[in-house]
Image (cartoon, rainbow, N blue to C red):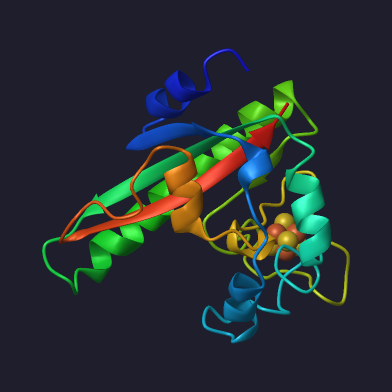
Length: 176
Ligand code: SF4
């Protein structure tokens, strides 16, 4: 991929940075957060634990890659309860990341896109009764791979938090 940062910024992301996938860690604490059911996707999607991978598999998989790009969408909120802007930014981020992931996957089918939150390609995930409908387009989350998102942002030279009345969504793509 020639200019991943330029590509990301042209796609409308607020910030983008490069990271070294070999420095990413799959942390049990993050997996525990998933298991606590906070986002209610644990054991409910092929893209989430326990179906997506073990932590050992996740770390091994991430460390196969030589390059990574992390992209962010930052929402400006009117106040701390501005749910409308939060949801709009999340939808914008997910749609933009799906498009970016398709561009990377076309050029490098072996790349690993890791999104913000569980895969939402289908209205209802087939898990666990039927196989994933789109295994080649499915988007596991950074958290599903045990990544502490704030740590990945630091690795990419970016902030995790951009100040009061902002909310930032982050995703990354690993490739070689
Ligand atoms: S692509 Fe569809 S079936 Fe596959 S993980 Fe995503 S939501 Fe589930």
